[in-house]
Image: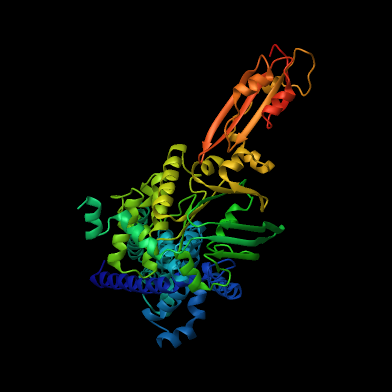
Length: 217
Length: 369
Protein backbone atom coordinates (compact mmCIF):
# COMPACT_ATOMS: atom_id res chain seq x y z
CA UNK A 1 0.00 0.00 0.00
CA UNK A 2 1.39 3.37 -1.00
CA UNK A 3 2.35 5.97 1.59
CA UNK A 4 -0.31 8.28 0.08
CA UNK A 5 -2.95 5.64 0.69
CA UNK A 6 -1.80 5.24 4.29
CA UNK A 7 -2.01 9.03 4.72
CA UNK A 8 -5.47 8.96 3.14
CA UNK A 9 -6.62 6.20 5.51
CA UNK A 10 -5.17 8.03 8.52
CA UNK A 11 -6.99 11.22 7.49
CA UNK A 12 -10.21 9.26 6.92
CA UNK A 13 -9.90 7.62 10.33
CA UNK A 14 -9.50 11.04 11.97
CA UNK A 15 -12.50 12.39 10.03
CA UNK A 16 -14.68 9.48 11.13
CA UNK A 17 -13.55 9.86 14.73
CA UNK A 18 -14.26 13.59 14.65
CA UNK A 19 -17.69 13.30 12.96
CA UNK A 20 -18.85 10.53 15.29
CA UNK A 21 -17.34 12.16 18.36
CA UNK A 22 -18.90 15.59 17.84
CA UNK A 23 -22.29 14.24 16.84
CA UNK A 24 -22.28 11.78 19.76
CA UNK A 25 -21.57 14.71 22.06
CA UNK A 26 -24.53 16.60 20.61
CA UNK A 27 -26.70 13.49 20.85
CA UNK A 28 -25.90 13.18 24.56
CA UNK A 29 -26.46 16.87 25.31
CA UNK A 30 -29.77 16.95 23.42
CA UNK A 31 -30.87 13.33 23.82
CA UNK A 32 -30.79 13.08 27.62
CA UNK A 33 -32.97 16.17 28.20
CA UNK A 34 -35.28 14.89 25.46
CA UNK A 35 -35.50 11.47 27.15
CA UNK A 36 -36.11 13.08 30.56
CA UNK A 37 -38.85 15.19 29.00
CA UNK A 38 -40.50 12.18 27.37
CA UNK A 39 -40.52 10.32 30.69
CA UNK A 40 -41.53 13.11 33.06
CA UNK A 41 -44.09 14.93 30.90
CA UNK A 42 -46.28 11.89 30.26
CA UNK A 43 -49.53 11.16 32.03
CA UNK A 44 -48.79 10.66 35.74
CA UNK A 45 -45.21 11.95 35.36
CA UNK A 46 -43.69 14.57 37.64
CA UNK A 47 -44.10 17.34 35.03
CA UNK A 48 -47.32 16.25 33.34
CA UNK A 49 -47.94 18.00 30.00
CA UNK A 50 -49.50 15.12 28.07
CA UNK A 51 -50.29 17.10 24.91
CA UNK A 52 -46.76 18.43 24.41
CA UNK A 53 -45.49 14.97 25.30
CA UNK A 54 -47.49 13.46 22.44
CA UNK A 55 -46.31 16.10 19.95
CA UNK A 56 -42.64 15.62 20.86
CA UNK A 57 -43.12 11.85 20.76
CA UNK A 58 -44.51 12.08 17.24
CA UNK A 59 -41.62 14.30 16.11
CA UNK A 60 -39.12 11.82 17.52
CA UNK A 61 -40.84 8.99 15.66
CA UNK A 62 -40.78 11.05 12.48
CA UNK A 63 -37.00 11.48 12.59
CA UNK A 64 -36.57 7.84 13.54
CA UNK A 65 -38.59 6.77 10.50
CA UNK A 66 -36.38 8.50 7.91
CA UNK A 67 -33.39 6.43 6.70
CA UNK A 68 -30.10 8.19 7.33
CA UNK A 69 -29.13 8.47 3.67
CA UNK A 70 -32.43 10.25 2.99
CA UNK A 71 -32.06 12.47 6.04
CA UNK A 72 -28.58 13.43 4.88
CA UNK A 73 -30.01 14.87 1.68
CA UNK A 74 -33.29 16.15 3.06
CA UNK A 75 -31.49 18.15 5.74
CA UNK A 76 -29.21 19.98 3.30
CA UNK A 77 -31.04 23.33 3.61
CA UNK A 78 -31.04 23.03 7.38
CA UNK A 79 -27.37 22.10 7.37
CA UNK A 80 -26.54 25.19 5.32
CA UNK A 81 -28.46 27.30 7.81
CA UNK A 82 -26.64 25.85 10.81
CA UNK A 83 -23.03 25.44 9.67
CA UNK A 84 -23.02 27.64 6.55
CA UNK A 85 -21.90 24.89 4.19
CA UNK A 86 -23.30 21.72 2.68
CA UNK A 87 -20.01 19.88 2.16
CA UNK A 88 -17.30 18.61 4.45
CA UNK A 89 -17.11 17.14 7.91
CA UNK A 90 -19.34 19.73 9.57
CA UNK A 91 -22.00 19.20 6.93
CA UNK A 92 -22.09 15.53 7.92
CA UNK A 93 -22.18 16.27 11.64
CA UNK A 94 -25.54 18.03 11.41
CA UNK A 95 -27.53 15.10 9.94
CA UNK A 96 -25.57 12.59 12.05
CA UNK A 97 -26.52 14.46 15.24
CA UNK A 98 -30.11 14.95 14.09
CA UNK A 99 -30.41 11.25 13.41
CA UNK A 100 -28.61 10.05 16.54
CA UNK A 101 -30.41 12.29 19.03
CA UNK A 102 -33.92 10.76 18.76
CA UNK A 103 -32.38 7.28 18.51
CA UNK A 104 -30.42 7.76 21.72
CA UNK A 105 -33.30 9.58 23.42
CA UNK A 106 -35.61 6.59 22.89
CA UNK A 107 -33.05 4.19 24.35
CA UNK A 108 -32.36 6.46 27.32
CA UNK A 109 -36.12 6.86 27.78
CA UNK A 110 -36.50 3.11 28.27
CA UNK A 111 -33.84 3.11 31.01
CA UNK A 112 -35.41 6.11 32.74
CA UNK A 113 -38.83 4.46 32.68
CA UNK A 114 -37.41 1.40 34.39
CA UNK A 115 -36.43 3.38 37.48
CA UNK A 116 -38.54 1.98 40.34
CA UNK A 117 -41.46 4.36 41.04
CA UNK A 118 -40.88 3.58 44.72
CA UNK A 119 -37.60 5.51 44.51
CA UNK A 120 -39.40 8.56 43.18
CA UNK A 121 -41.96 8.23 45.96
CA UNK A 122 -39.16 7.96 48.53
CA UNK A 123 -37.47 11.04 47.08
CA UNK A 124 -40.75 12.97 47.29
CA UNK A 125 -41.23 11.81 50.88
CA UNK A 126 -37.86 13.25 51.94
CA UNK A 127 -38.70 16.64 50.45
CA UNK A 128 -37.07 16.47 47.03
CA UNK A 129 -38.27 18.98 44.47
CA UNK A 130 -38.96 17.70 41.00
CA UNK A 131 -35.61 18.68 39.56
CA UNK A 132 -33.91 17.02 42.56
CA UNK A 133 -35.69 13.86 41.55
CA UNK A 134 -34.31 14.11 38.02
CA UNK A 135 -30.81 14.86 39.24
CA UNK A 136 -30.54 12.53 42.23
CA UNK A 137 -32.88 9.69 41.33
CA UNK A 138 -33.81 9.35 37.66
CA UNK A 139 -30.44 10.05 36.01
CA UNK A 140 -28.11 8.24 38.45
CA UNK A 141 -30.37 5.20 38.75
CA UNK A 142 -30.78 4.93 34.96
CA UNK A 143 -27.11 5.61 34.24
CA UNK A 144 -26.02 2.01 33.47
CA UNK A 145 -28.83 1.73 30.91
CA UNK A 146 -28.08 5.17 29.48
CA UNK A 147 -24.38 4.32 29.02
CA UNK A 148 -25.35 1.02 27.43
CA UNK A 149 -27.66 2.93 25.09
CA UNK A 150 -24.93 5.40 24.26
CA UNK A 151 -22.66 2.51 23.27
CA UNK A 152 -25.30 1.23 20.84
CA UNK A 153 -25.82 4.75 19.50
CA UNK A 154 -22.12 5.37 18.85
CA UNK A 155 -21.72 2.02 17.09
CA UNK A 156 -24.74 2.83 14.90
CA UNK A 157 -23.25 6.26 14.16
CA UNK A 158 -19.94 4.78 13.05
CA UNK A 159 -21.95 2.80 10.53
CA UNK A 160 -24.01 5.80 9.45
CA UNK A 161 -20.92 7.99 9.08
CA UNK A 162 -19.85 5.78 6.15
CA UNK A 163 -22.50 7.61 4.10
CA UNK A 164 -20.95 10.98 4.83
CA UNK A 165 -19.06 10.78 1.54
CA UNK A 166 -22.32 11.83 -0.10
CA UNK A 167 -21.71 15.33 1.23
CA UNK A 168 -17.96 15.12 0.67
CA UNK A 169 -17.17 14.70 4.33
CA UNK A 170 -14.70 11.91 3.80
CA UNK A 171 -14.20 9.32 6.48
CA UNK A 172 -13.47 5.63 6.34
CA UNK A 173 -16.67 4.67 4.57
CA UNK A 174 -15.95 7.17 1.79
CA UNK A 175 -12.43 5.75 1.25
CA UNK A 176 -13.79 2.21 1.12
CA UNK A 177 -16.41 3.16 -1.48
CA UNK A 178 -14.10 5.20 -3.70
CA UNK A 179 -10.98 3.04 -3.64
CA UNK A 180 -12.26 -0.34 -2.59
CA UNK A 181 -15.48 -0.42 -4.60
CA UNK A 182 -15.05 1.96 -7.54
CA UNK A 183 -11.32 1.22 -8.15
CA UNK A 184 -11.41 -2.45 -7.17
CA UNK A 185 -8.67 -2.02 -4.55
CA UNK A 186 -9.59 -4.94 -2.31
CA UNK A 187 -6.73 -4.27 0.11
CA UNK A 188 -8.06 -0.82 0.96
CA UNK A 189 -11.50 -2.30 1.48
CA UNK A 190 -10.13 -4.93 3.85
CA UNK A 191 -8.03 -2.44 5.80
CA UNK A 192 -11.05 -0.14 6.23
CA UNK A 193 -13.16 -3.05 7.43
CA UNK A 194 -10.44 -4.03 9.90
CA UNK A 195 -10.20 -0.47 11.25
CA UNK A 196 -13.98 -0.27 11.62
CA UNK A 197 -14.07 -3.59 13.49
CA UNK A 198 -11.38 -2.36 15.88
CA UNK A 199 -13.21 0.96 16.42
CA UNK A 200 -16.54 -0.71 17.12
CA UNK A 201 -14.93 -3.25 19.43
CA UNK A 202 -13.17 -0.49 21.34
CA UNK A 203 -16.41 1.45 21.77
CA UNK A 204 -18.31 -1.65 22.85
CA UNK A 205 -15.58 -2.68 25.29
CA UNK A 206 -15.40 0.77 26.84
CA UNK A 207 -19.18 0.96 27.19
CA UNK A 208 -19.43 -2.51 28.70
CA UNK A 209 -16.67 -1.75 31.18
CA UNK A 210 -18.31 1.45 32.38
CA UNK A 211 -21.67 -0.29 32.74
CA UNK A 212 -20.08 -3.13 34.69
CA UNK A 213 -18.38 -0.65 37.04
CA UNK A 214 -21.66 1.22 37.61
CA UNK A 215 -23.57 -1.97 38.27
CA UNK A 216 -20.94 -3.43 40.59
CA UNK A 217 -21.84 -1.08 43.40
CA UNK B 1 -18.12 15.68 85.31
CA UNK B 2 -19.89 12.60 84.03
CA UNK B 3 -19.22 11.21 80.59
CA UNK B 4 -22.62 12.27 79.36
CA UNK B 5 -22.33 15.78 80.69
CA UNK B 6 -18.85 16.04 79.27
CA UNK B 7 -19.85 15.04 75.77
CA UNK B 8 -23.00 17.15 75.97
CA UNK B 9 -20.92 20.16 76.93
CA UNK B 10 -18.26 19.63 74.33
CA UNK B 11 -20.26 18.43 71.37
CA UNK B 12 -23.61 16.83 71.84
CA UNK B 13 -23.30 13.10 71.39
CA UNK B 14 -25.47 11.65 68.69
CA UNK B 15 -28.61 10.78 70.59
CA UNK B 16 -28.48 13.65 73.02
CA UNK B 17 -28.01 16.02 70.13
CA UNK B 18 -31.13 14.74 68.47
CA UNK B 19 -33.18 14.84 71.64
CA UNK B 20 -32.20 18.28 72.84
CA UNK B 21 -32.47 19.98 69.48
CA UNK B 22 -35.68 18.23 68.66
CA UNK B 23 -37.62 18.95 71.79
CA UNK B 24 -36.93 22.61 71.16
CA UNK B 25 -38.08 22.81 67.57
CA UNK B 26 -40.61 20.04 67.32
CA UNK B 27 -44.26 20.71 66.79
CA UNK B 28 -46.76 18.43 68.38
CA UNK B 29 -46.93 15.78 65.64
CA UNK B 30 -50.65 15.21 65.48
CA UNK B 31 -52.66 14.05 62.49
CA UNK B 32 -56.41 14.44 62.01
CA UNK B 33 -58.46 12.92 59.22
CA UNK B 34 -61.81 14.58 58.57
CA UNK B 35 -64.11 12.61 56.31
CA UNK B 36 -61.29 11.55 54.04
CA UNK B 37 -62.33 9.75 50.86
CA UNK B 38 -60.33 8.66 47.85
CA UNK B 39 -61.60 7.55 44.47
CA UNK B 40 -59.30 6.03 41.86
CA UNK B 41 -60.24 6.19 38.21
CA UNK B 42 -59.14 3.18 36.28
CA UNK B 43 -60.07 1.61 32.98
CA UNK B 44 -62.34 -0.75 34.88
CA UNK B 45 -64.24 2.22 36.33
CA UNK B 46 -64.13 4.03 39.63
CA UNK B 47 -62.66 2.40 42.68
CA UNK B 48 -63.51 3.83 46.09
CA UNK B 49 -60.27 3.26 48.00
CA UNK B 50 -61.23 5.25 51.11
CA UNK B 51 -64.66 6.14 52.45
CA UNK B 52 -65.30 8.86 54.99
CA UNK B 53 -62.35 8.23 57.30
CA UNK B 54 -62.33 10.38 60.42
CA UNK B 55 -59.57 9.74 62.88
CA UNK B 56 -57.31 11.49 65.36
CA UNK B 57 -53.72 10.48 65.87
CA UNK B 58 -52.10 11.90 69.00
CA UNK B 59 -48.64 13.32 69.39
CA UNK B 60 -45.99 10.80 70.38
CA UNK B 61 -48.10 7.68 70.06
CA UNK B 62 -47.40 4.60 67.97
CA UNK B 63 -50.51 4.23 65.88
CA UNK B 64 -51.25 1.17 63.78
CA UNK B 65 -53.36 0.90 60.66
CA UNK B 66 -54.16 -2.68 59.78
CA UNK B 67 -56.23 -4.30 57.10
CA UNK B 68 -56.13 -6.94 54.42
CA UNK B 69 -54.54 -6.11 51.07
CA UNK B 70 -56.64 -3.62 49.18
CA UNK B 71 -58.28 -2.32 52.35
CA UNK B 72 -56.92 1.17 51.67
CA UNK B 73 -54.25 1.39 54.36
CA UNK B 74 -51.52 2.42 51.96
CA UNK B 75 -53.68 5.18 50.46
CA UNK B 76 -54.62 6.43 53.91
CA UNK B 77 -51.00 6.59 55.04
CA UNK B 78 -50.00 8.45 51.86
CA UNK B 79 -52.56 11.18 52.42
CA UNK B 80 -50.55 12.28 55.48
CA UNK B 81 -47.58 13.51 53.41
CA UNK B 82 -49.76 13.93 50.33
CA UNK B 83 -48.06 11.35 48.20
CA UNK B 84 -51.75 10.84 47.54
CA UNK B 85 -54.32 13.60 47.63
CA UNK B 86 -57.73 12.76 49.10
CA UNK B 87 -60.71 13.19 46.77
CA UNK B 88 -62.90 14.42 49.61
CA UNK B 89 -62.33 15.52 53.19
CA UNK B 90 -59.30 17.06 54.84
CA UNK B 91 -56.09 15.93 56.45
CA UNK B 92 -54.66 18.17 59.16
CA UNK B 93 -51.09 17.85 60.33
CA UNK B 94 -50.52 19.79 63.55
CA UNK B 95 -53.82 21.48 62.85
CA UNK B 96 -52.77 22.67 59.40
CA UNK B 97 -54.90 21.66 56.42
CA UNK B 98 -52.39 20.24 53.95
CA UNK B 99 -54.69 20.00 50.94
CA UNK B 100 -54.01 23.57 49.82
CA UNK B 101 -50.21 23.28 49.85
CA UNK B 102 -48.27 24.07 46.68
CA UNK B 103 -44.86 22.56 45.92
CA UNK B 104 -42.96 24.79 48.38
CA UNK B 105 -45.33 24.13 51.25
CA UNK B 106 -45.47 20.46 50.40
CA UNK B 107 -41.67 20.16 50.43
CA UNK B 108 -41.59 21.86 53.86
CA UNK B 109 -44.33 19.55 55.15
CA UNK B 110 -42.55 16.45 53.91
CA UNK B 111 -39.36 17.49 55.66
CA UNK B 112 -41.33 17.26 58.93
CA UNK B 113 -42.63 13.79 58.09
CA UNK B 114 -40.25 10.86 57.62
CA UNK B 115 -41.29 7.75 55.75
CA UNK B 116 -39.93 4.22 55.46
CA UNK B 117 -40.99 1.59 52.95
CA UNK B 118 -41.49 -2.15 52.61
CA UNK B 119 -38.84 -2.41 49.92
CA UNK B 120 -36.62 0.25 51.54
CA UNK B 121 -36.44 2.35 48.33
CA UNK B 122 -32.79 3.25 48.74
CA UNK B 123 -30.91 4.79 45.83
CA UNK B 124 -28.61 2.11 44.44
CA UNK B 125 -26.26 4.63 42.85
CA UNK B 126 -25.53 6.33 46.17
CA UNK B 127 -23.62 5.09 49.21
CA UNK B 128 -25.27 4.71 52.60
CA UNK B 129 -23.92 8.13 53.60
CA UNK B 130 -25.16 9.77 50.39
CA UNK B 131 -28.58 8.18 50.80
CA UNK B 132 -28.95 9.43 54.36
CA UNK B 133 -27.52 12.84 53.43
CA UNK B 134 -29.90 13.44 50.54
CA UNK B 135 -32.79 14.96 52.56
CA UNK B 136 -30.38 17.51 54.05
CA UNK B 137 -28.57 18.11 50.77
CA UNK B 138 -31.76 18.99 48.91
CA UNK B 139 -32.81 21.17 51.84
CA UNK B 140 -29.62 23.21 51.42
CA UNK B 141 -28.05 22.33 54.77
CA UNK B 142 -24.36 23.25 55.07
CA UNK B 143 -21.92 20.47 54.25
CA UNK B 144 -20.32 20.30 57.71
CA UNK B 145 -23.73 20.07 59.39
CA UNK B 146 -24.74 17.32 56.99
CA UNK B 147 -21.73 15.22 57.94
CA UNK B 148 -22.44 15.60 61.65
CA UNK B 149 -26.15 14.86 61.34
CA UNK B 150 -25.65 11.86 59.07
CA UNK B 151 -23.19 10.49 61.64
CA UNK B 152 -25.81 11.01 64.35
CA UNK B 153 -28.51 9.29 62.35
CA UNK B 154 -26.30 6.32 61.43
CA UNK B 155 -25.28 5.94 65.06
CA UNK B 156 -28.91 6.04 66.14
CA UNK B 157 -29.77 3.09 63.89
CA UNK B 158 -26.55 1.23 64.69
CA UNK B 159 -24.87 1.49 61.29
CA UNK B 160 -21.64 3.30 62.11
CA UNK B 161 -18.86 2.24 59.79
CA UNK B 162 -21.20 1.30 56.95
CA UNK B 163 -21.34 4.78 55.49
CA UNK B 164 -19.21 4.10 52.40
CA UNK B 165 -21.10 0.91 51.49
CA UNK B 166 -23.62 0.72 48.65
CA UNK B 167 -27.11 -0.50 49.62
CA UNK B 168 -26.85 -3.63 47.44
CA UNK B 169 -24.17 -4.94 49.82
CA UNK B 170 -26.45 -4.71 52.86
CA UNK B 171 -28.88 -7.21 54.36
CA UNK B 172 -32.60 -6.45 54.45
CA UNK B 173 -32.48 -5.36 58.06
CA UNK B 174 -29.51 -3.09 57.41
CA UNK B 175 -31.26 -1.57 54.40
CA UNK B 176 -34.27 -0.76 56.54
CA UNK B 177 -31.96 0.82 59.11
CA UNK B 178 -30.56 3.04 56.37
CA UNK B 179 -34.16 3.87 55.43
CA UNK B 180 -34.89 4.80 59.04
CA UNK B 181 -31.74 6.93 59.25
CA UNK B 182 -32.75 8.72 56.04
CA UNK B 183 -36.23 9.31 57.42
CA UNK B 184 -34.93 10.64 60.75
CA UNK B 185 -32.05 12.80 59.56
CA UNK B 186 -34.42 15.73 58.93
CA UNK B 187 -35.56 15.42 62.57
CA UNK B 188 -39.20 14.87 61.68
CA UNK B 189 -42.06 14.97 64.14
CA UNK B 190 -43.92 12.10 62.46
CA UNK B 191 -42.60 8.83 61.03
CA UNK B 192 -44.73 6.92 58.53
CA UNK B 193 -43.98 3.22 58.16
CA UNK B 194 -45.36 1.53 55.05
CA UNK B 195 -45.24 -2.23 55.73
CA UNK B 196 -41.73 -1.56 56.99
CA UNK B 197 -41.12 -5.10 58.22
CA UNK B 198 -43.12 -7.12 55.70
CA UNK B 199 -40.07 -7.98 53.60
CA UNK B 200 -37.99 -9.03 56.61
CA UNK B 201 -37.56 -12.34 58.40
CA UNK B 202 -39.15 -12.67 61.87
CA UNK B 203 -35.94 -12.06 63.80
CA UNK B 204 -35.02 -8.95 61.81
CA UNK B 205 -38.63 -7.78 62.10
CA UNK B 206 -38.32 -7.86 65.89
CA UNK B 207 -35.05 -5.93 65.84
CA UNK B 208 -36.51 -3.24 63.56
CA UNK B 209 -39.64 -2.97 65.73
CA UNK B 210 -37.38 -2.70 68.77
CA UNK B 211 -35.52 0.14 67.05
CA UNK B 212 -38.77 1.92 66.18
CA UNK B 213 -40.01 1.61 69.75
CA UNK B 214 -36.71 2.95 70.99
CA UNK B 215 -36.88 5.90 68.58
CA UNK B 216 -40.43 6.64 69.65
CA UNK B 217 -39.38 6.67 73.28
CA UNK B 218 -36.18 8.62 72.90
CA UNK B 219 -37.24 11.18 70.32
CA UNK B 220 -40.91 11.30 71.22
CA UNK B 221 -41.99 11.36 67.59
CA UNK B 222 -45.34 10.09 66.44
CA UNK B 223 -45.10 6.80 64.56
CA UNK B 224 -47.89 5.77 62.20
CA UNK B 225 -47.48 2.35 60.69
CA UNK B 226 -49.46 0.18 58.36
CA UNK B 227 -49.20 -3.56 58.28
CA UNK B 228 -51.21 -6.66 57.54
CA UNK B 229 -49.62 -8.50 60.43
CA UNK B 230 -51.37 -8.27 63.77
CA UNK B 231 -48.17 -9.39 65.50
CA UNK B 232 -46.50 -6.11 64.45
CA UNK B 233 -49.37 -4.11 65.93
CA UNK B 234 -49.24 -6.12 69.15
CA UNK B 235 -45.51 -5.60 69.40
CA UNK B 236 -45.34 -1.81 69.33
CA UNK B 237 -48.64 -0.01 68.81
CA UNK B 238 -50.69 1.68 71.46
CA UNK B 239 -53.80 2.25 69.33
CA UNK B 240 -54.98 0.62 66.15
CA UNK B 241 -57.55 1.18 63.46
CA UNK B 242 -58.81 -1.72 61.37
CA UNK B 243 -59.64 -0.86 57.77
CA UNK B 244 -61.92 -2.97 55.62
CA UNK B 245 -62.73 -2.03 52.01
CA UNK B 246 -61.78 1.58 52.62
CA UNK B 247 -63.80 2.05 55.79
CA UNK B 248 -62.98 1.98 59.48
CA UNK B 249 -64.10 -1.39 60.80
CA UNK B 250 -63.03 -0.70 64.35
CA UNK B 251 -60.67 1.42 66.31
CA UNK B 252 -59.28 1.49 69.82
CA UNK B 253 -56.45 0.62 72.17
CA UNK B 254 -54.59 -2.43 70.92
CA UNK B 255 -55.34 -4.59 73.96
CA UNK B 256 -59.05 -3.92 73.52
CA UNK B 257 -59.18 -4.66 69.81
CA UNK B 258 -57.11 -7.78 70.43
CA UNK B 259 -59.05 -8.96 73.42
CA UNK B 260 -62.53 -8.33 72.10
CA UNK B 261 -62.49 -8.02 68.31
CA UNK B 262 -65.96 -6.96 67.17
CA UNK B 263 -65.63 -6.83 63.41
CA UNK B 264 -65.26 -9.96 61.24
CA UNK B 265 -62.30 -8.31 59.47
CA UNK B 266 -60.48 -7.95 62.78
CA UNK B 267 -61.27 -11.52 63.72
CA UNK B 268 -59.91 -12.70 60.39
CA UNK B 269 -56.71 -10.71 60.86
CA UNK B 270 -56.33 -12.09 64.38
CA UNK B 271 -56.78 -15.66 63.21
CA UNK B 272 -53.07 -16.52 62.85
CA UNK B 273 -52.33 -15.27 66.36
CA UNK B 274 -55.18 -16.95 68.14
CA UNK B 275 -54.82 -19.90 70.34
CA UNK B 276 -57.54 -21.87 68.72
CA UNK B 277 -59.38 -24.89 69.93
CA UNK B 278 -57.37 -28.03 69.24
CA UNK B 279 -58.40 -29.41 65.83
CA UNK B 280 -59.39 -32.82 67.15
CA UNK B 281 -61.68 -31.18 69.67
CA UNK B 282 -63.33 -29.09 66.97
CA UNK B 283 -63.87 -32.26 64.93
CA UNK B 284 -65.80 -33.81 67.79
CA UNK B 285 -67.75 -30.73 68.78
CA UNK B 286 -71.51 -31.07 68.38
CA UNK B 287 -73.94 -28.19 68.55
CA UNK B 288 -76.35 -29.93 70.91
CA UNK B 289 -76.16 -32.34 73.79
CA UNK B 290 -77.01 -35.85 72.64
CA UNK B 291 -77.09 -37.65 75.92
CA UNK B 292 -76.81 -37.20 79.66
CA UNK B 293 -73.15 -38.16 79.64
CA UNK B 294 -72.14 -35.39 77.16
CA UNK B 295 -69.86 -32.63 78.44
CA UNK B 296 -70.42 -28.96 77.70
CA UNK B 297 -67.45 -27.03 76.25
CA UNK B 298 -67.22 -23.58 77.84
CA UNK B 299 -65.32 -20.77 76.18
CA UNK B 300 -64.22 -17.79 78.26
CA UNK B 301 -62.51 -14.78 76.74
CA UNK B 302 -61.40 -11.76 78.66
CA UNK B 303 -59.41 -8.62 78.03
CA UNK B 304 -58.20 -5.77 80.17
CA UNK B 305 -59.35 -7.15 83.50
CA UNK B 306 -58.28 -9.72 86.02
CA UNK B 307 -58.45 -13.32 84.91
CA UNK B 308 -61.55 -15.23 86.04
CA UNK B 309 -61.15 -16.87 89.42
CA UNK B 310 -60.82 -20.56 88.59
CA UNK B 311 -61.76 -21.73 92.05
CA UNK B 312 -65.04 -19.82 91.85
CA UNK B 313 -65.72 -21.39 88.48
CA UNK B 314 -64.91 -24.85 89.77
CA UNK B 315 -67.19 -24.35 92.73
CA UNK B 316 -70.04 -23.19 90.52
CA UNK B 317 -69.54 -26.05 88.09
CA UNK B 318 -69.35 -28.77 90.67
CA UNK B 319 -67.19 -31.77 89.89
CA UNK B 320 -65.37 -32.63 86.68
CA UNK B 321 -64.17 -29.34 85.28
CA UNK B 322 -61.36 -30.04 82.80
CA UNK B 323 -59.03 -27.50 81.18
CA UNK B 324 -58.95 -28.12 77.42
CA UNK B 325 -56.99 -25.13 76.18
CA UNK B 326 -55.83 -21.79 77.56
CA UNK B 327 -53.69 -18.83 76.63
CA UNK B 328 -52.95 -15.54 78.30
CA UNK B 329 -51.03 -12.61 76.82
CA UNK B 330 -49.98 -9.29 78.23
CA UNK B 331 -50.56 -6.41 75.83
CA UNK B 332 -49.60 -2.96 77.09
CA UNK B 333 -50.02 -4.12 80.66
CA UNK B 334 -53.44 -5.65 80.05
CA UNK B 335 -54.18 -9.34 80.23
CA UNK B 336 -55.86 -10.80 77.19
CA UNK B 337 -56.81 -14.42 77.51
CA UNK B 338 -58.91 -17.32 76.42
CA UNK B 339 -59.81 -20.36 78.48
CA UNK B 340 -61.64 -23.42 77.17
CA UNK B 341 -63.09 -25.82 79.70
CA UNK B 342 -65.07 -29.03 79.50
CA UNK B 343 -67.70 -29.37 82.20
CA UNK B 344 -68.67 -32.81 83.45
CA UNK B 345 -72.22 -34.17 83.18
CA UNK B 346 -74.65 -32.53 85.52
CA UNK B 347 -72.75 -29.25 85.71
CA UNK B 348 -74.87 -26.25 86.62
CA UNK B 349 -74.16 -24.17 83.50
CA UNK B 350 -76.32 -21.30 84.72
CA UNK B 351 -74.21 -21.06 87.87
CA UNK B 352 -71.01 -21.03 85.80
CA UNK B 353 -72.40 -18.26 83.67
CA UNK B 354 -73.44 -16.34 86.77
CA UNK B 355 -69.90 -16.63 88.13
CA UNK B 356 -68.30 -15.66 84.82
CA UNK B 357 -70.58 -13.65 82.58
CA UNK B 358 -68.45 -14.04 79.44
CA UNK B 359 -68.62 -17.84 79.64
CA UNK B 360 -70.24 -19.25 76.55
CA UNK B 361 -71.18 -22.83 75.78
CA UNK B 362 -69.84 -23.44 72.28
CA UNK B 363 -70.88 -27.08 71.93
CA UNK B 364 -70.77 -30.52 73.42
CA UNK B 365 -68.44 -33.46 73.29
CA UNK B 366 -69.26 -36.98 74.31
CA UNK B 367 -67.72 -38.35 77.50
CA UNK B 368 -65.23 -40.49 75.61
CA UNK B 369 -63.70 -37.69 73.56
